Image (cartoon, rainbow, N blue to C red; front, side, top):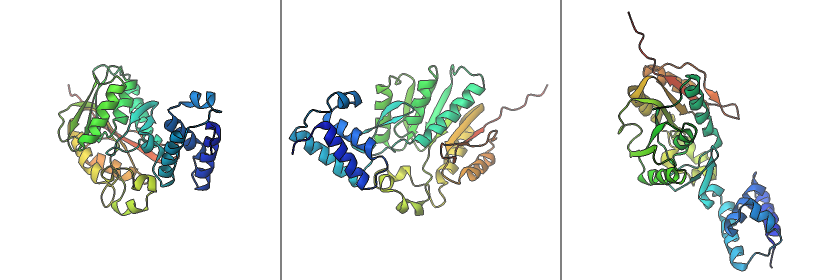
Length: 293
């Protein structure tokens, strides 16, 4: 039976809603638009056009994938972060709004220092799609940054995103384990490392457990393995008065601050909370030595 675009959208949203999808209307619009090659304006202006049998088949294919628990971002291959469209791959996490808290805290630190970011050096450890690094470079037009990852596929995706956003001239990418292949000093180091306890992964939502790369989720028995590595590395690479900002999982901020202090860093601000009130962005500085006269 032939359907108009608007009727197809409403029918798809009803199916998603019946399946318990909390974002049924949005998912239906995004997937239908992707299947038809239409943006929001095109969906509105073409609302009464009848979709073709071939288009209907594409819509149904995407609908079945979504109903099976695949995130919309994986199906369309793009996710917006900090207002930037980022390409995804099987080796990258889907960037989440919570992680924008890391960008907010990092910018807060840079700007509170009265810095213009001229010559600012940034490192993003475990960069994935490049989300945090590219968001910072988009806000700090004279800064230079490097993103690291152990996955060459992830770095290929990050390079493509940098090129698409015209940031390739200020972003480089290195294959290594967090900061193991870098030389400092860096004024700012950021990271969203894996922090899920190994034993908790089986209980994650299908969208995460079955579609995000396990290496980007699994933080070891207590969820803190990555922090133990990258915090000690960062302490050696930070410039005097340089800052480290990391994303924390629920209930992890105190332990992460303790690891920072043990590495010789100084926590000067309480963790910044995300929109749900969870302490999300944990930061510390490598204080400059006090001069004696």
